[in-house]
Figure 1 (cartoon, rainbow, N blue to C red):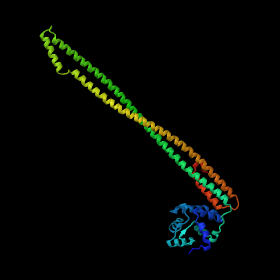
Figure 2 (figure 1 turned 90 degrees about the horizontal axis):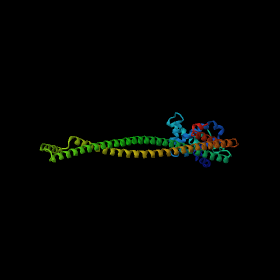
Figure 3 (figure 1 turned 30 degrees about the horizontal axis):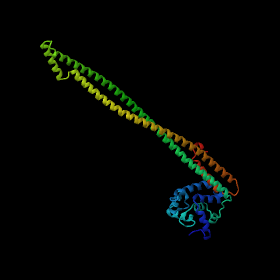
Figure 4 (figure 1 turned 30 degrees about the vertical axis):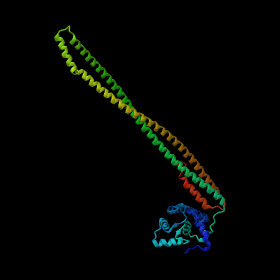
Length: 355
């Protein structure tokens, strides 16, 4: 049966409808003298509630019975199922089979329902709102800083990869350029061989024609004897029946030289096309690497600026909270909680900025 009276329900609902952090701040405000030394423990309980709330997390305000038991188990208390349920019934003030931070803190420290409902919250509402706005702005600045630092790291990694790719492309272009030069040299050598083979062929063909002309002249020279003319005729027939060995060899050599030259030319064309493509790819990779480096530098500058801005806003919020703390009638729980939030956010600053 609910321990909340009918005339208490509206106020109770108003308090319990706050999220877990809001409930903790309410209790710290109302019972600061008792809970000041317990504030860090309550902070940790709140983080655990946020984790256990499977639906709303930090925006939630109550854990169901199952997750409430998980929370209690996590405190290291050894209880049977029956003992656990009995303890849960004592905690569950409104008997809705759910556990709020208010209910747990109230049970843990023995606060009465009336004392909770009338717990003072301080009279510096405007100051707390102003400080809260600064804390929220500082937290947002830290979140933005975290995102920019992550982007800076990612941009630096992209720049490194682009630089590595550019070097790899440049190395490949250098190799294919060397291969192209080697192929061009091979063409020049093949052309020289072909030119030499052609000259040798032409020389052999000229010698053949000269010998042929000489034999035809002797064969047809009626001023010399028949024997000489017949001998010349026989030699001419032999000459015309088949190319002499030197001429055949010259033709073979010239044909081979021409084919070699053709192959070398084709290989050189292929090598040059590859070298040109690799050179273009290397240039594109170099431009991409330069662009990535510029982006990385810009991202780093933005990240450093965001670090300075986050640090400034965190300190501004702390100064505001400290000023509020010195005033009378303050909500000490709100102030402690916001200072604790700033302490948590400071962990995201670069190590050199944490102090």
